[in-house]
Length: 127
Image 1: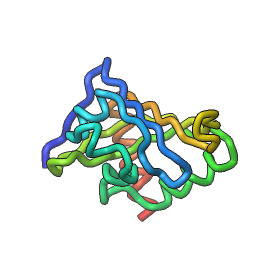
Image 2: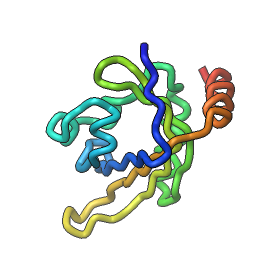
Image 3: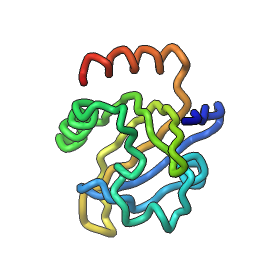
Image 4: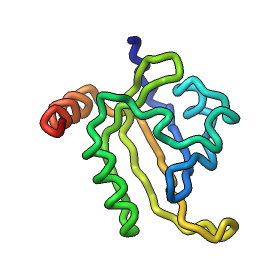
């Protein structure tokens, strides 16, 4: 399947609730993942989870953010059309005053080719 390589100014943002349900997605996320905002909001964020990603990587993410700490890492996501793209993600735990609930804000940018290769090598050991 085709890989989408992020541009240096692509910046993907999404917000989820504690169960990973998407509450917000910015234009870059929608465009790159290939979904409209209406197709994403209300869906679990794993709608873009690529099958190559080891479950241990996401377990580490959730274990970190649920303790209130910020998580950083590399993620291979899938597009609606079946392609994929790599991101360097930072996930921030937050308290949403309007919802009166914990939410998570994920900000993603383009990783370097070396960072992608290092992530692939690491993830190959987690399978």
